Picture (tube, rainbow, N blue to C red):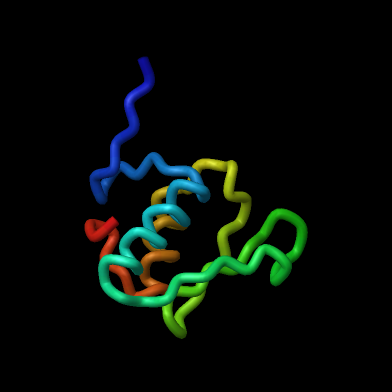
Length: 82
């Protein structure tokens, strides 16, 4: 069976899972989180966390570790908070 790991050094998460976790974290922190699927080319979507934003490339694809950390950095979120 395939097990997903969410430790900060071995991220295995799709874009959709990232979006879901950011929304849950935003709700817990009282920060508005919105997703704009029309602002982006092709399958790219813009995810807003308060006034910060990041681009989610293809929500169905698994995020690479560096991409995940970069997206967290753009949103001013610690990877371990997700």
